[in-house]
Structure formats: structure tokens, C-alpha cells
Length: 229
Image 1 (tube, rainbow, N blue to C red):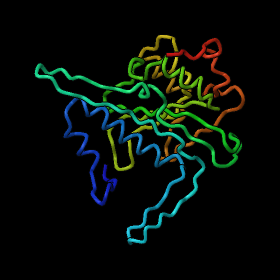
Image 2 (image 1 turned 90 degrees about the horizontal axis):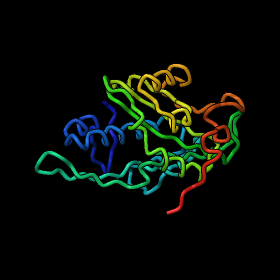
Image 3 (image 1 turned 135 degrees about the horizontal axis):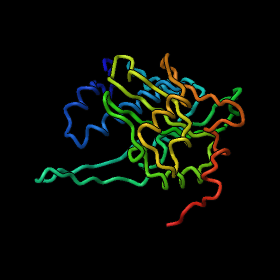
């Protein structure tokens, strides 16, 4: 990836960073990089930080406000036998992003919230159901949040100057299900129900009241109740 992200006036080439990590950290680095790419392509509000020492930030309004960004938090400790201890938060199984509409549109009212889960797989690697998330924890989070809609943004293939080779927006309930899904089932869902992003601009349109991404249409959740700890 040629684009670089400045952090405290230091530039880090994320592609080089990911490839030079320990194997147990590579997947997380690729996932973090994809989340950064997604949030910069969804027409979200942002601020420009002046580099002229004026201590003044300039806000720019987008259609979406990033209300929550729950990027995966993990810590790995390598063992002498080659294994690794992994420490994770329960929040890792929540959707990565909660977005709130800052204005009205044909699909959304101002204040409507959607939940977005980001997944990226390198060339030659397919998405499997056990890699999606902890379904039960995801269900609990979505029942509590009650968003208008839920989506997966799925990127795959080699990383280019413009991001992943292919990016799809998939109705989330089709993948977050108790039903057993093979990699072939997931590919069929992508081919029949996903929308491919060709111009790099990620949007979340809804196809009427029967759209499978709508939370109110999620049949599997209608008889579920949030668990208590």
C-alpha cells in the first residue's frame, strides 16, 4: 500500500509493518489496516489537523458519524514451543463500527444507526464461518443496540495502491447465523446477495422494506433475549 498514515509526524508503511510481524500478529495488522481503509471510504465526518502550528483543527461533515470504533484488541505472548497465548476482549465479537446518519437520505433518517463488521482475507484465503465472529456475543450486542441495519464489508485479494483487489458489502444477518455455512455457502451469498464496490466509495443502500440487512427482518433474533452475566 503506497498511502501512508502519519502518527505524531512519523510515517508508517502499513504493508511493510504487517509483513514484518510475528505470524500471530499478522492477521490483526491486516485487519487493522482494512478497518482504516473502510473508515476513510464511507463518507464519514473527519477533522483536518493543521501542520502549521496554529493548534486549530478543521472539521468536515460527512454523511456518517463514527459513533463507536471497536477495533479488535489482542495481545499475544509467544511460547518456547511455538504456541502463543492470546488475550482478547469480549468486545472483539461486537461489530467493528457503529455509524450514525448525520442527515436524512432516501434510505435513512437523521440519527439512524447501522452496525458494520469489517473482514479482510489475502489472496488465496477464503472466509470461513468460524472466522466471522462469536455469533452469540454478536447477537447480544445487536439486540442491545437495535440498529436500523447490519452489514459486513469484506475485502479480499492482494493489497493494491487503491486498497484490496475486491470489496463487497454484504447484508450482515446472512452471515451471522446459527445455520452451518461452508466456504461455498459464503461464496454463494457473496455472489447472489452482496454488492461489489468498484469505485472505492462504500455506501449502505437498502432495497426496500424486505432488505435482508434490516434489523427488523432478522428472523433469527426475534425469539432471542440478551444474556446476562
